[in-house]
Image (cartoon, rainbow, N blue to C red):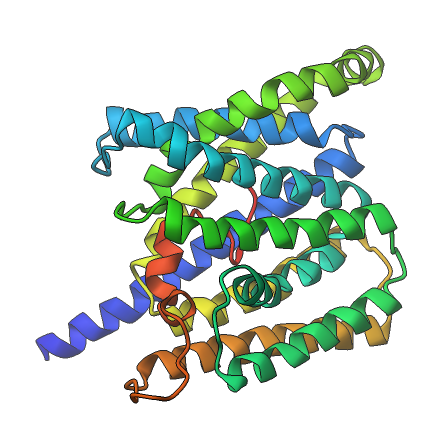
Length: 345
């Protein structure tokens, strides 16, 4: 009886963790799109900078003030040699995600971000010369096919937004690959990752944001009918972005890797549906088919990767490298802002 109660509570906790992750993730994406489209605040660098500032403050409060997570000590030298390069790529990833949101619908952007598993495998194969099981390559076919179908049939296609989202996938993959080498020896969780990377990202982005968007923001403040209410929404998006990272820590420790993968793909479907209900961007039938094929492909890829990770290695046969074979520990390295590290800071 007691075991049954524990099992039921474990299931309930997993479901609640997934639901709150979905809620924060979809809300952050929708609010960011609302800022660019409805508030006419077309300054993605500044929005990203606000998110990094809020995340820096939030990480400090959680670790130093509330002490909800123990601080992982990093040598000062390693902060510049190992954390700073990660922060730079991390910054590019977030900025490109917000840039793409300005130009293309949420549904299209989320579908493109699902291309990340393919870019990660290709980069590891090209840069690190890692050999992958043929089933890994086969699992990428529906992902690539779905992305191509979605791109061809997208009614609100914008080349600049498409390229920003696609390069964002490459940045996410690069971040994932760098994490294994640069953060080797540090068992980072999502909150400690934000604690160390967000201040660096703020420092990297603050000056470009002021130089490139400062005059535009001043003009926007003078012409917008309700600037202070709009600023509250913009800074609220930063708070929500930090809450998203905190929610990821909870969901990772409450579910299995397979459950997390499936929930991540269903989350994309929820984000697409909610964004369509709010913004009513036109979506064709074939576009929906392409999005569905991509999500099914991502789920199948996660299943294949998990299945291969459970197989005992046989001497003399090709094996999948450790990086893609241990998705749970990999997720704990980064704030998963996407694998789905694409979720926005």
